[in-house]
Length: 313
Image (cartoon, rainbow, N blue to C red; front, side, top):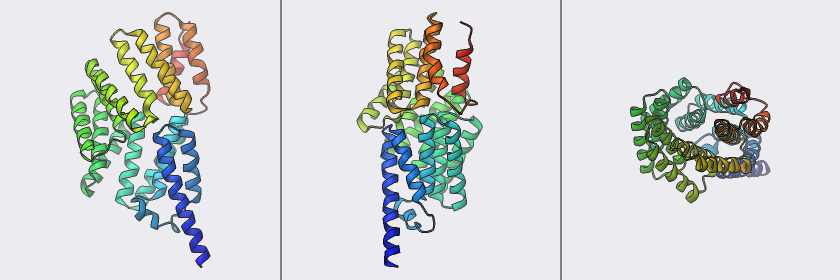
């Protein structure tokens, strides 16, 4: 019995180690390494033998493993698998009837959908998250849910209300002492400013987000922040500066093996080339990035890339 107990304790320690490493690697933009730790942790986890881990980390480990794996897969270029994992995490959190796990699962799912997904599904996740967080007194998750609700409003062209919710959510998020995931929400706020025609304010938010990334090492979103900055600079007529930021985004994505971020940067740069009358260069740039994918062809990212490639020369 002692031997079995030691084995269980050793396995629990390994599971916690894999989870800790996976989270750190994910936020640093080392998606492949994070995926390996997440898969190893899931393989070791036994929900019955490792019940005590819930008390140690506050959330059922399987919910975290599945949710983080969804993010890693998404960035690595496997969006279909990513949403399957995210849905599995939420389904598991509902089955467990454990409010902190449900809040974590909903937040991870909403965060993923905020990067790319159905507005209806995103709104449903955000509303439920805010409801659970309010009822249970989870200020961090309530702030996150408020920010996501704001992004939904912006995507539905209710920009004024959306910006208000994004700002209040960011303020509440800061009040918790957290900075993690602030850069992506600041990016959403910058996009809202873009829709409203406030390009200068949008650039300021992106600069603030990039400063947080450099200070904290939260590099997982660095490629997207640079791409968005290039897009706003292009709207100000700074084509050369925009190209530099697109290329920087492309370089970061390639170094991270983040195929989805790479595709987005390639689409932005290819569109710039097309608008400059350099269609052949645009096609040569985008075709390899698009050709790598084996799934996700119904997603907006791949449909946009396919449409751009299909334009007449």
